Image (tube, rainbow, N blue to C red):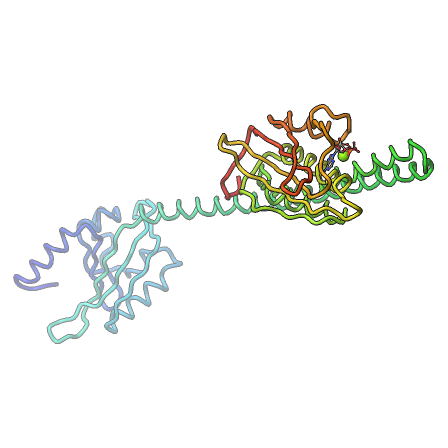
Length: 356
Ligand SMILES: Nc1ncnc2c1ncn2[C@@H]1O[C@H](COP(=O)(O)OP(=O)(O)OP(=O)(O)O)[C@@H](O)[C@H]1O
Ligand SMILES: [Mg+2]
């Protein structure tokens, strides 16, 4: 097979290589396999495979690849591939195979060298990773589908709540028409207006599917613009901090804001001119929140106390303010109009921008 010192050296290198090394004749039959190769392929005796066509030792699906590799090597080209081939005893193994030409002193290809490295562990690790990645992708797809479903359901609930509010408001207005001019008629109109405000508070309370909290500044901003737009008053919104709060807290704050805006329009219009209203939300030093609503109207009556007033509006504000761990106070704005301050101490406030 090989002659002299060089071939002796070459054979001892081959014999000691951890890879499975084979010398293949140009007709594709096996001429030599190193001891580690025999061991890796679980072949007891080389005589079992000697002179057999190399592709025949592989599963049928790879034979074409091997035949092409032998042809390429006999024409002087190197080829590499990764393939599955069980050992002689059926142990599953993955191999990274390099097939290259062996040339004689004149440069003529006279044999083919095949080096196969056992990459079973790598392939299995890679397959496990791929399996995990598939698993994760499946989970993400399932969650996406659940979120989409949730969004549809939320939309449906929103729609129904809106319709219910509209139905109640229409009913109250219908009854009010039957009592036009008397006290009951005014009370029914008041009730219809209050429910319509409540509907606005709910309508703006959009909860992103997948999020537990409400971005308070967006919510209050939209609600203020919506209510003032409907009442024909101008509103200026000061820049607000990005705080997110529980939906129930947001709805309670929204309800207070709606009452204060309603009052500003109703009692803050000086000589028929709609008031200019300012709304600001700030974080206080003691980790609380301060909501300020002020107008440029005639101002509050003498001795006004928001906590003891008998009007339903201020009572609603006081009840919600206490529920939110704070209180409401009133005074004069810079222009001499009314100024309300709502101090809040919420159980759950989050300043992060990322969704929950
Ligand atoms: N922005 C304001 N400017 C001037 N006065 C105000 C303002 N807000 C409230 N007030 C005074 O406080 C009183 C109490 O307000 P409250 O909201 O409790 O009752 P209301 O608005 O009169 O009736 P409702 O119960 O329908 O709200 C008002 O009647 C009004 O005199
Ligand atoms: Mg009121």
